[in-house]
Length: 295
Image (tube, rainbow, N blue to C red; front, side):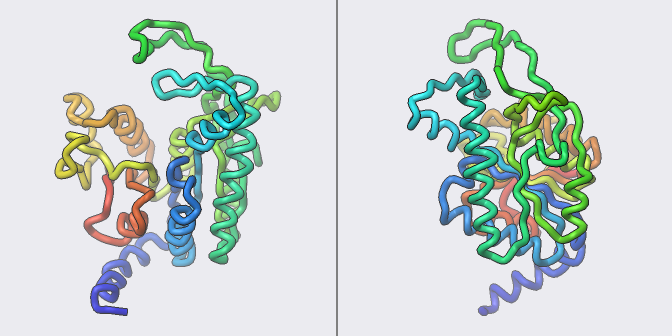
């Protein structure tokens, strides 16, 4: 181990002491989980957080893999303003991809590293109580026409029950949750993974919500890497939203994060999950790699 690595360990020590026994909710996008080598690298980082005493919950989506499977099967997909219409065939594929392949791949990577993880969907233990989304009148950005859209088997969260998650965390397990939920009649819904991760973070009173995506954080100008914002307070975030100063379509995500901080999560982070060690650098170094929003 060289001097630089020893310095990194010294820098990490106070963060390990500070966050031991605190809850971290880590959301993985489909892009992050698609490549086996990248997934194993990321699993190593999550495993390290688990081994030093952080209570980690993983939530994952899988839109990229769902689109790829639909293409292979010749099933037409309708995506309006970035939101997928989930018809009967798409819901069946989502069950297979989310609760099946992706969840199992994450568990396999963690098992390889000796982590006791448990694969769940929002249906397990009634974690996610949802209802079918009502038809909405929206402006289709592709056509410039307002239209009423029925998103099909897409759900909105009504309530979150974290009793099972607390039980697992208390016993040293790492829950891995796919982005499905259900109503009282057992109807299954496709639910946005960012929303699930945020609601679970609030209900677990998490120390951090970490959103791993394919971007390095929040930018004032998405095309200029020098404008990445490393840290933001809640008030600074509100001002950026009011002025429309954030680039790359990040205003809705930043607005969701500010609401999350208002509800008690200590900090929220947006980082690039495809970059090796990005998660560890964000947690264990002063500089970080993405954007951190705090109260």
